[in-house]
Length: 234
Image (cartoon, rainbow, N blue to C red; front, side):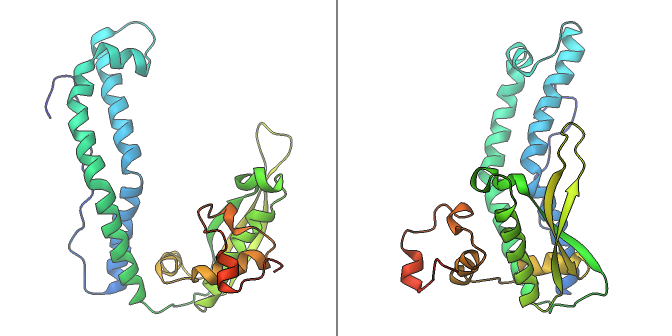
């Protein structure tokens, strides 16, 4: 895909590299590939924007840039970009699933090794569930607690911390619950890819915490609790 309007190379879909035999080392390498894949669609969008901006700066040299104006001014960029975007759309989901399948397989080969220091693992903002609990943090805390339960089930010490964050444009501080685990970062990542709670245990845990599991999983079948003998009273 060469064209005088395209000054930067196109993003390249990350490949799965040759991995070492040690499963923990292999997991660490593959995690980096997974991180690239997670952000790859955004990387492509930014590259598209950059191609339009470069064309605008080099050819127009006046007026205020906007995506809509540049896209109309240089349709050949979109014409060249379209087949690339289609190829990404076709290959990206499969590549991501392949990497995640390998990560799960490698994680199962690595026994949990607790650490000596508490390490940050996850943050859940109160505002993520504002529409269901009016921002009081009930659903955020329950979500964080289920993460703690999963880490504890694997033999790690874990805890939830309520944290206040100063907001620059809001007189009220932003609130969150943080999950901390007594393990290093790689161990936490491995733990996240080991088998966790069954769906039955997860749903039961939600009701014990006093939250409706369908807030987190809207497609949970009607009657699931009754079928599996789960009490909605906690």
